[in-house]
Image 1 (tube, rainbow, N blue to C red):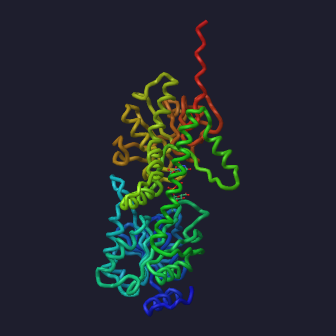
Image 2: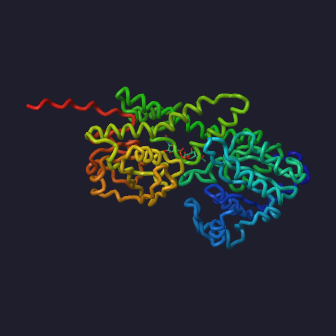
Image 3: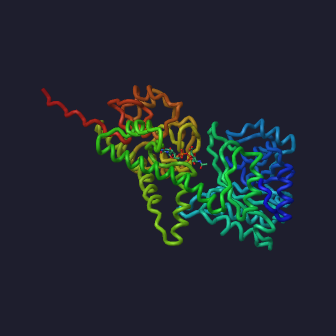
Length: 458
Ligand code: SAJ
C-alpha cells in the first residue's frame, strides 16, 4: 500500500489490517457473504458473520456450510480455530474494525430498487459504529447508493465519513457453482469515499483476494458492476431478437451464433433462451435505469432488452402452439411437460426463472402443466402464477409418451435427450439441447421446415 499520509485513525486501522489483527465482520451470510467471511478467516483475520437468519448462524457455529461452493470442512476448521464465528446479534459490530455489507438488493413489483435490506443493515451498524471502522458495501446497487443512502445513516450518530470512519463500495462478483472463478481469484474492484477509504478497503481484501482493482470513487465501483450485468442483459436481448429474426427468415440461429463464435476477437457468444432468470441479470440493469431517469435520461437499451427478454416466454408458448398444431391439438386440454424449471443449467435456483412464466401462460390457456427437474423436486403454488403445488415427475418413457408436448426450458445435463427425442411425440427446444434437426423437434430461433403438403388421397 502506498505510504500516503494516513490520518491517525486510518493509520491505526491500516496497521491492524496489515498485522491481521483487524476484527472483520460480514453482514449477510448468503452466497456472497459466507464465502467472503471464509476467505477473510483463511487470510488470517478474525471474521464474524452476522445474519438475521438464526439457521445460518447455527449452521456456521456448528461448522457446517449451506453454500455449495463453501466446504463444511473449511467452516469447521475456521470455527474451531476461532477465526470464524457467527451471530444474529448486531451489537457485535461494536467490536469490529471492518464491516462488509452483503445483503440482497431485489426489485419491487414496480421495478423500482428495493434498498430496504441495505437500509436495515446500515441502521443496525449505525447503532454500534465506533470511530476508526471501515464499512464496505458489496450489494449490487445504483451509483450513489453508498454516499447518498449509506453515508448519511452512518453519520447520524455524529461521526463523519472519511474522517471518523471509512466507507467504500466493492461489487460482488460471485458466480455460484463456478469452480474456476472463485471469491479468491476473481479481481476485486474497490472504490472509496476518499483515497484513504479506498486504500484501507484495498488493504483489507489484499490478503484474501488475489487481485485488487482500486477505482477513484464509490460511484465508479457501483457503476462497474451494473455495466457488467447490463452488458449481459443487453447482449442476451440482442441474441433473443436475432432468434426471432432467424425464425422468420428460416435460418437456424444456433448455427449462426456458433459460427460467429469462431471469430477469435471482437465477439463474445450469447445464446437465445426462453427469457432471463436469476437474481442478477434481470434485476441489476433496472437499478441503473431507475437512477438515470432521475436526471431525465431515457435508458433505451436497457428498456428494449428488458422488453425483448421478458417477451420470450410468450414466444415460447407460440412455438408450443405451433408444435401442438402440427399434431392437430389445441393448447387447451393438452398435457405439456416442462423439462427444467431452474433459471439456468445444473443449479436449483428458480428465482425469476422464465420456465415459470411459460408454465403460467400455458396454465392460463388451459394446458395441463407438469414439470421435470432433478434439481427442483417441488414447486409451491406461491412460486408461480399458476398457483398449483406441483411435484417434479420422473422423465420416464411413460411420462414422455403421455405428454402431448415436452418443452426444454432448462438444459440440465442430467436429462437424457436421446430418450426425449425417441419417446416424446413433439418437443419444443428453447436451449438447442437437442443437436441436429428432428421431425418432432421445434427449436426456438429455427423455423420448422414447412410442413410437407399432405399428398392428395390416391
Ligand atoms: N442466459 C441466456 N443466454 C445467455 C446467457 C444467459 O439466455 O447467453 C440466461 C440464463 O439462462 C439465465 C439468465 O440469462 O436465465 C442469467 O444467466 P447468467 O449466465 O448471466 O447467470 P447469472 O444470473 O447467474 O449471472 C451471474 C452474474 N454474476 C454476478 O453478478 C456476480 C453474472 O455477472 C455472471 O457473468 C454470470 O453469473 C456468469 O457468467 O455465470
